[in-house]
Image (cartoon, rainbow, N blue to C red; front, side):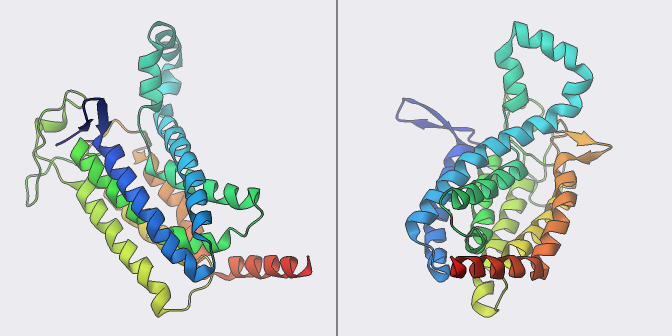
Length: 276
């Protein structure tokens, strides 16, 4: 386990951040190549990704805070008191992590915001981001495994992992654990390859590629949550925050896969552009 990487003696960069940044940089290059199929300039892909990255970080932090609300709300008076005595600890507890679904929503919003600001259609970008999202996510999950976060349940079968002691997560090395982070990384790489080649084999409607990804991942994530051992994460009625978000996003994936609504929207937008 390598939670941090020394940067020439200047400081330490978390392994998660390091692997994520590598994945994000490679994804931009891949996105530039994909964008050519849809007439998107490489610079627009870069700038849109920058917007998306900013909102990704914000969304991931906000969703992490939301996941803590089931604990914060019943103990609000205690948190207010602690905020006065040790604000750094309280802020770290409330915003010290990242939640993928929040990052996903934030990233998509950032792309939309870029297109809105510069008066471009956001729909072609959906074909670009669909494959690169799981690509970046896979790198992030490898970082999770190296850092020891998002760990799996107790497990004594094949591929079980015994993590070394980590003072930030004292319970981590108590038992062998299922490498759920690596399984999720593998599933993300698989869907990345599928989404990369589907448009070459089939004629898809606008938004269907993103819909396929959402359907694939929401179902996979719902069951992956059952293999997660970090039970301190937020849950409502025994259902984790990520499972709730999976249920909410599932109908969106179905709508996108059907393709009819977006097809009409895209056609109407092209008509408006022609009229102008």
